[in-house]
Structures are given as structure tokens and as C-alpha cells.
Length: 553
Image 1 (tube, rainbow, N blue to C red):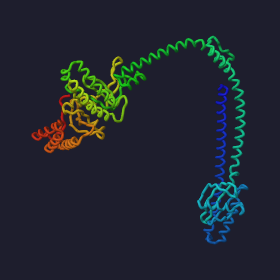
Image 2: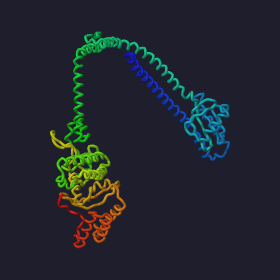
Image 3: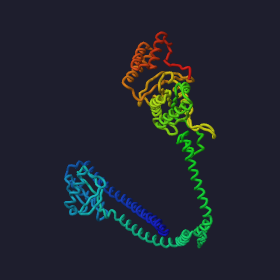
Image 4: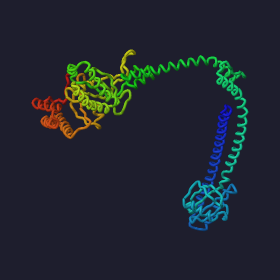
């Protein structure tokens, strides 16, 4: 498609659309204005007629003549005369129907109303049409304004032929259409003339450029014909040709370096995704300056530690220990990442992970709890392999907390870690240590309990005051599901705790005995039974709240 045709196809629709919209707008404006005035005129006449009838009726009522037919007929005759005085055109008709749908009067004469006309008027009356109406009388479309006059039981109508009503609008529309057609024709003619004048130098320039491309002859130049923008364009093109070869060589060099940079970026991603979350690496490449900026965020923190790891290392050679740890970490880390967690760091045999950063989810606490439980499930298979290899089994404890921490790339420009810090992190570490005391696989904080209690069964373990804290924490253990015995045992346990905190140690001890029968070897129920026995012998002070104070981390 030529430039000339593009100019025409671009400018012509704009002109035509502008003209059409202007014509439509003016027509609509005229139509609306004339229609509004005409409607108001019909409405005014209808209201004037109604006012006249009201006045006549009031005179009859004031003189107690409303029951005398002679005077009523006189008023009706006067109404016709008044209606005729309101007529302003030959096509305008004012009429009235009585309660039997019979014409009382019509300014157009009785011959105007045929059978079809009476049926349509009767239909209007039956529908109780009020205000603006459209109808057909004498085979002609009409518009009008109707109202009911209850004292006489009349339905009155002031009407005008539609053609007469919209005559001025039709004339304006026709004139706009003629003007639009003439303006469009003149626009097309002028566009053809001026577009040819404007595009002829460009056409000659394009021909010269095509010769350069076909012949690969960079010595050829475009002839500068005019001292205007087109002449400047030709001169600029000639200068561009001089630099084209240099630019081409630079582009090849840039492309080569871009490929190397992309390859280097992929290598960096491949290496550092083992240490840093993918989202953090993406953020680095988008905005390296933001690396040292931290943010406060609510997320879940998980600590996992191998129990008795020092003893295990004494039973294995170094290469065996490394192989077992790598296998163990691979299973645990895969499970954490599967649950949208991030492994923060390895601390010897311990794992620290968090859930909710860089990407936050609505169920981070639940995902952390499920990850902890499934890590314990994976440990069963891992220990089976350890036994087959005649290696010692691993036992792990997991602590999970949920709360506000500071998360970000913490460190210096030379060495940094994407990590979390804060009091909630320290509490998660304390919870992991408590798994050794209470002999539980997973211990969660009260914050985690609030988030997951509707999804997973939880068991209240104790109210503890950990070292370095001023407020007690309720700690819980959690499972994916309970068998029948465990379900009954946990019910006994929670009833026993309620009695225990109410200082009813005798009944509480009975409940904890039931737990021990249902779950043989249960450390928690045995611990509470011993506490009850101790408090029965030596009751706690009056301000005792059941909080167990820990003296070590």
C-alpha cells in the first residue's frame, strides 16, 4: 500500500467521521430541541384544556348545577369551542371520549373518527394511557398528550400528525445529508491532489533506497531535491549510509556480548538457585539496589534438628556421615520446597526454613505444619534404608512458629544471606528444643495452632515460659489424623488438662491414667500424672496458674 493511499485512508475517514458525527449531533440536537418544544406545547395545551374543564366543573359545583344535564351539555359545547381555540394547525385534533368510549367532541369533525379510530381510542382509554402517546387516526400516524377528566368521565387527547410534528427535524436532516455529501466529495478531491504532491519525493527516494538494497552498493546516494523536511531526510539518509557499515559491525559485537551475558546469567541462576530462592534471584536482576532492603512480614518458621547427632557421628565414618546427611537433607529440603517453603540455612545437622517469603500465601502456617509432619513420615523410609546399610537411624524434632519477622537480604555487599530475624525466629528454635523434653515429633506455637486448628487435630501440651520470655506460651503437638484410640486419648487429655488447671488434681490424674492406657508410653500424660501426684502431696500456691517455667533453652 502506497504512502499516498495511506494518507488518503487515514485522513479521509477522520474527515468523514467528523462530518458525520457533527451532522448526527446537530440533527439529534435539533430533533431533541424541537421535540421538547413540541411536546411541551402539546402538554401545555392539554394542561390548559384540563384547567378549563376544571374551572367549568367548579362553576357547576358552586352553583349546584352538576346534576342538571342542560348545563352539563352547555359546558361540553363550550369545551369544544375552547378546544377549537387552541388549534394552531390544520392537522391538529383535540377530542374527548365519554365513559362509554363514545366521542364527546372532536375538532376535526365526526367524519375524522372511523371504526378503527374509535377502537384505538378505546384501547388507549382502557390502558389508562396518560401523558405522551402515539397512535393512528384516519390512517395517519399521530402523536399526542392525553389526560382523564374524572368529573365528566372523559378521556381527552390533544394530537398532531407525526409528519407535521417532525417536519423541521426532517428538513434539517436532509440539509445535513446534502452538506455532508458535498464536503466529502471536496475532501476526497483535495486529498488526491495534495497527497500526490507530498508523496512524489518520497517515491523517488524509495526507488533509490531499493537500488541500494538490491545492488549492495553503499556508494550510491539519494538526490536531495528540496530544502525542507524531505530534503533533510534525504541528506540524513546519505549520512546514515556512511555509518551503516560501522554500525553493522558494532551490532554484531553487541549481539555476541549479549549472548555471552545471557549465558553468564543462566550460569549464575543455575549456581545460586541452590543457595538463594528463585524469586530473590529474579528480584536481584530486576533491581540490584534493593538487595539490602528488609521488610517486616508475618510468616511461618520451621526448625528441625537431629537428636543425639553427636552420638551418631561417633558410630559412623566421616564419608558415611556425609553421605547419610546428604541423603537426609535431600529428602527434607525437597519436602519443604514442595510445600512452598524456603530453606534458610543448615546449622550442622539442623535445618531452618520459612514459609511466606518472598511470596506470601494465605496458608503458610498450614503448609509449614504439613511439611513438618511429612518430614517425619519421610524419616521412616530414610531409617529403613539406614537399617539396610547397617547405619544408625535418625530421630528428629521439629518446632514451628508463626509471627512477625524481618525478612530480606541481610549482610554486606560482599557477603549476604536471604534470611529472617526476629523474636519469632528465636521462639521457633526454643520450640524445637522442647521436642526433646516432651518427646514429641512436632511442637507448634499458639499462633500456629490458631491458623491450623480447623484443618489438623492439635493437642495442648503445656503452658510454658521459655527462657528469655516474659509471657507464657501454650504449646501444642499436631498430627494429620488420629486413629480411634488416639482420638479418645486426646479427649481424655484435654478434659484432664481442664481439671488440672482448675486444681482438681485427683480427677485430672484419673484422666491422665486413661490416656496412658490408650497410648502406652505416652510421655505427656505420664508427666501430668506425676505433677498431679506431686501437687496432691504439696498443693501449689494460691496464685498458681499452671505455667511451667523452663530454666534452659
